[in-house]
Length: 264
Image (cartoon, rainbow, N blue to C red; front, top):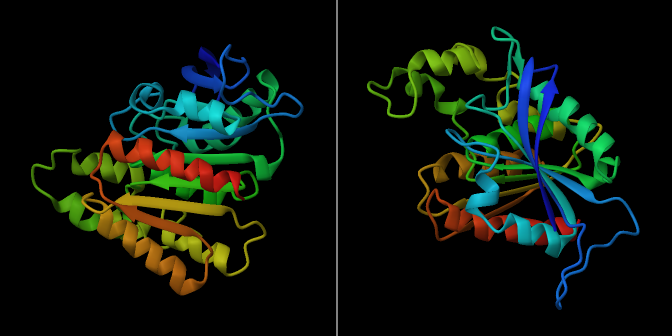
């Protein structure tokens, strides 16, 4: 197992950016999973949540061990609080960074597959939204999506913006990030609109895995997207289990998701 702490110049974000890369390249001197070096590794671009950073998955979960167990390279970028959307007002193009530049950089530097079926995007909370939104919009790039406890706030954005003393962020933050609430529904920031576009004849339909804790405050919105995807006939997997919005749930379900990914 090798963990790399990388800094490189991003043209889409116009600055130096950090990246944590986890590769199952070293054989441990005791019984256990061995890396398969006979072919390029599959890749998983794993996104953090709101207020998080590129080391969250490394510190909060067993992703290092799971990378070895499932023979997959994991790349954890920093998305700040961007919801992984392009911010053209700041010249911070997070969608372009995640879906184009980061993939090109990692493919040039590391021994990973260039095939769509071997390229996955995943995340938790804000990163779950980012994985669903960018994975569905860029389905020609990503063959698989893993979304845990996704922050699917676009359906309720009008009420979120009106909330007084919102402890998460100000109304101006949400408007800057997503646009005016009345303009979001049906746009490419709306996961339901992207799901409908795929169901109606998308060239590439990724494998989609979603999960949320039964006691998670985001459970209702995750159930709603599951029901909508079922209604429109978009294939996906949705699981629930005991848990809140915390690392105990995400650590357990990233393992379940990787087991699911192995079976695709």
